[in-house]
Image (cartoon, rainbow, N blue to C red; front, side, top):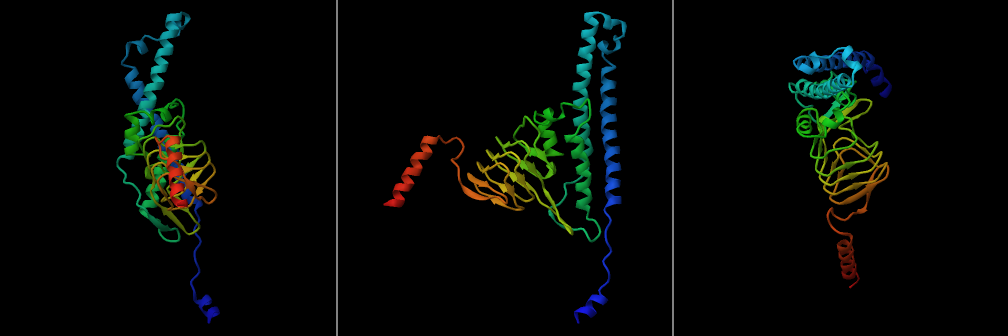
Length: 281
């Protein structure tokens, strides 16, 4: 019976992902050139209105004053280009909705949310791998009001600032609270790709969370206030880490509790001694 059913079952057509990936790479090239060109055009248009830019000449570089004016103008050019680059990213992101959370099978027609996520991945690459002279985009992303603008569009929606850009694969689906520390090399992603399906789910990181270096946080994870994740820990999808909990390991598991943020070590020790005395009584 099983052999008969196997003969009657229609053959499954294998999906070739290569053409789709090549098309996405072409879109990536085109979008990034558009962003760079728009930012450059806006910068040149604004600077051309200034007296300092119009007075520049090669002969003026032979004097200290002329060389200084050229350097100041070049500095203003770079700063203005970075602002224009960020604003262009925000404008491109505005018309598109956020991908919906869910499980999407890859052996069927591609869902709209997968296409949206792919397009947002292109904008994310342009944001985190900005070309010269957009060398201060990562700085502006942690400075108001640009942090707010990017948080409302590209993401992550954050109340924290970072000296180094955290490795957030899908920033549009990540919420980060206040005073959050994300260690060097830690990775946060809102999607998980298996052979036959992709899971998309939001990641929430509440206030005062500390994420160790090279930790991995997968889709659907919720880390509550004051929790600590040890370095190199790997948190499985849709895991909930409670307040002030200590997690570590691969896969990550609860190892204990940490004192609440703002509580002195002395107070915590006294509370633990009182709890131990009560347990022994």
